[in-house]
Image (cartoon, rainbow, N blue to C red; front, side, top):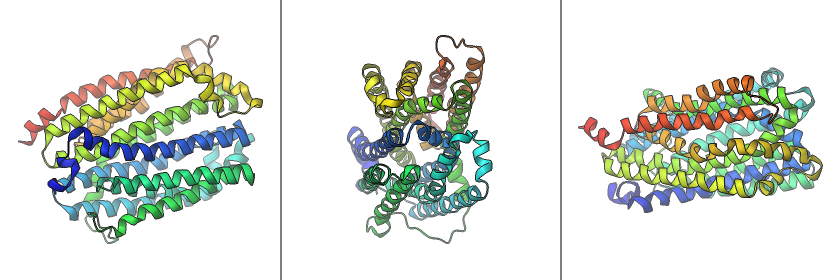
Length: 452
């Protein structure tokens, strides 16, 4: 298998970017589709529609957290099994992750149908935008079943050496989402329901394209409904716990941010933060392009005991994310008026002005958040979920939560009402020191000693 698998035998730099480039292209397609969503919604429906979607993010991130736990924890576990030439174990992990994705997301969809009002109250959605939230949620709750199951499938397809098929599916879905957004929102004036239906159509096509994997003659993973070794599910869930913590923490932080911003600046403040958050999302998605490739190559080389390659792959990934952070900060520093102005029409320029005030506070975050993601994913890939989870919990929940409350209550608001948001980049930089320490403790040379 090693002779035919580029992850195990190809040149390090070329192999890394062989997996990174398709992932980056696919994730850029997804990110651009979300940015275009924001442009359509912000300009055609209004800033309150942007705020309605943003206020629902804590719930959406709960669902995404479960999917990422299954997808990343499962794919690195399957990757290690592939490196060990154990295709039966890898296939069982694959099957259990997909089955769990369908069941869990279906349960959430039906539960939200009966407790929708309670959910909106829990999310602190103001009464004036509840109709907008309900319009969107009526469709998107069902879309998430397919969307998140497809996410899990995507990770496994890439882990089994089909990055181009995985990327092609993402690109098809993203392009269709943009096309149907334009049709449903601009031409048919279907509002937020139109945005949700556009997502639904895009996800159906994306799943169908990705499903070509099941008939591939070159696949390693075989799906089987009948599963009896549930210890594998416990293992894959444990391996993905740091990604679950990362994502669920995003939901908690968004809930706190939404509450604090609503209290200080109202719905318009939430809409203003949404504009900057699109670029945080862009940064994270691009970083996951590098992290996804690192998951794949490190887990397989770790399984094959090729630890020198693990070290070189980690170096390339870290250098890549540092470069990415510098580029994003440069773009946002040079042309903030242009990029923020895309999302609001001329009648809502006050939203842009508020966004422009908070952007400088968050710029340091872009320099390091991608590297933190990569270092956390490295620990997951070498089957060290505990330190990975500690970093994830610290950077995504404990530090930002405590710092947000401290700064919100004690920083003066006269100069800048968003001054408390400096907690977010500060939390990332403190967590970076912790991540460096853990990665030094579990550096490849020490892994070599432990394995022998």
